[in-house]
Image (tube, rainbow, N blue to C red; front, side):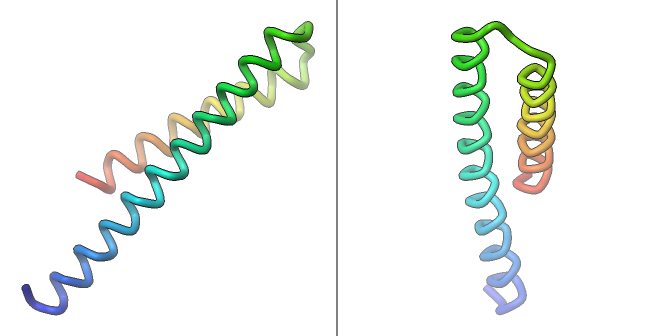
Length: 69
């Protein structure tokens, strides 16, 4: 492999690794929020925070998928 190809490969692997970790972290936050929402009466703030995180999870997931393909 040329050094350019090696660098591109390494960069891609780093992106994939970051995305994987980030996605796992966001999923954990999401699961935690779900649990919190079930434990307490959902107020507007908790719901808004939850929706914001949900959209971050799906954005991260889709951008990671497109960068790893």
